Image (tube, rainbow, N blue to C red; front, side, top):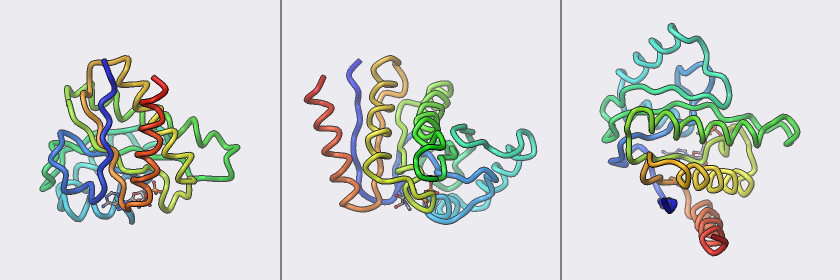
Length: 178
Ligand code: ADP
């Protein structure tokens, strides 16, 4: 199956997809950036759901992902994944970022979701260089979609135009390579 990746500029909380991905921190109890925006838009039910997961499973390790309800969001569910904190590049950051994307896609598929939206995981407070993170995102998602029936469509949500152009360039390059 051909990869179905679409680049979107804007606020991930507004998207009417099956599942949106949160760039969470290991506590799962909310934070700033996209995490804060998702919790604000979803309402208190999301934090309650995260607390239940936290009680059952403890913290979420970098590269792992968990799923909850979506509260007031237009999405049906939220997948919370923890990206790597950038520490210069020789602390498995690339591998952990790939895992965060792959585990999120696998969790969406396991729940029979067809459409999923990702933010640019780790590129805010966690400091992962944007170009390298975008390359990993596009490559990992594309590899996954090539080999699996679900999800059917993935939206990469960029908060600003500059990041969206970066993603678009990578996607076009990759399309030309295959
Ligand atoms: P991390 O801790 O994983 O770095 P951040 O939330 O700090 O997570 O940033 C991740 C990315 O999400 C950044 O590129 C940031 O610009 C982007 N972002 C912030 N708010 C939103 C939003 N509402 N929708 C989509 N992307 C967002």
